[in-house]
Length: 375
Ligand SMILES: CC(=O)SCCNC(=O)CCNC(=O)[C@H](O)C(C)(C)COP(=O)(O)OP(=O)(O)OC[C@H]1O[C@@H](n2cnc3c(N)ncnc32)[C@H](O)[C@@H]1OP(=O)(O)O
Ligand SMILES: O=C([O-])CC(=O)C(=O)O
Image (cartoon, rainbow, N blue to C red; front, top):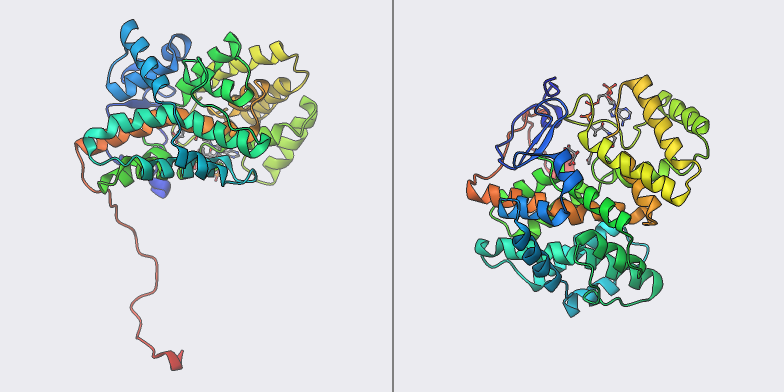
């Protein structure tokens, strides 16, 4: 099925540039990163292999992967001034604002002086983003100053879980994190990536591009939907209760978070991949109702509106079953999507023209100037 054809609102259906990084919905439901199918990547790769693919252009061999992980581990030291800045942010702050500020402060301390530094600057962020959110979270919520270099977990997902809980993550949890981070890594000209590219097109610095992207991902119509989905389903104790509430919400014309997509028409290929892990985690934790509630919501949305789960819906329960606080869901998305954002910034810089569309004017015709005392 072809992509949605909609009128111009939201630039839908219009090409806003070209990319060699990713195809979304090219064959209706497909998703590829540099030609590799998302299902192959999510079922077989580690997240760091995909980061290498997106940022360095090819899947690494074993030695390259080992070296890459060693390099990222070596970059996990938080600058003292950044720790001080994070300690000033209250526990009541939104964690996405913490990510945005953390990225921005880093850009002040370690400025990208020249575009030749873009890969190094990105890999520093890749290593530091889990540290930024966990340092702030543990300090503001538990009063603990964590040592972000004190863990031997050599993968991004395991590293995040270890810093968050202080406990070594299980193999199951590490596998889920690899899959999740791979699914979230890249998605063509989505809103946050487009924001990063617009910023890059002015020849701004990398940290500004990523900060713009973080702010754009934060909203519930984009990355914030995984948190919003969790906040919705956790209210319901049974599938029947979920069904009644969804029907009521649809009648009120409410948006159901975690459903629908701007490009895909039939399904989001990432859903089946994360849903499988959500089910396995549900069994592992002895969940009595949340997975069943989610499945019922999925069925009702299909039946009533023909709408399908996007990448965010079953991420909510998958993260919840791993004891990740709901408000940290979208920052995990940031740790991953950084790779896609940065790869797009590199691509924009390679063949740049400032992004500046036109607008259809709908305001008043020209009016006569009135001196202030006559208004
Ligand atoms: C990782 C990601 O960012 S994935 C997206 C995460 N966001 C969400 O899950 C938020 C909920 N979903 C939505 O708001 C939308 O589906 C978006 C923002 C993802 C896409 O928006 P659009 O491209 O404008 O949606 P689309 O054109 O397909 O909408 C068609 C119709 O379905 C309705 N619809 C779409 N999604 C939903 C939903 N989740 N709940 C209820 N109705 C919906 C729209 O209101 C619209 O109805 P209308 O024609 O009566 O106005
Ligand atoms: O492509 C989009 O519009 C939103 C999305 O699914 C993503 O960014 O992963």
